[in-house]
Image (cartoon, rainbow, N blue to C red):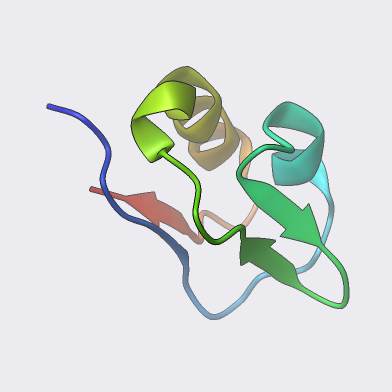
Length: 62
């Protein structure tokens, strides 16, 4: 099933790992943000890897 939604729950520590793994989807400033207008299905592997590597486990997708 394709990823259609990506979000970051409270508790992000802005470590930057998600942006390093998948900069097409994630942007880190004072906290991590999901880029708007991205076709998430094009970056499923990167989204999954970023979620798995998140040290505080706040990256979620469906």
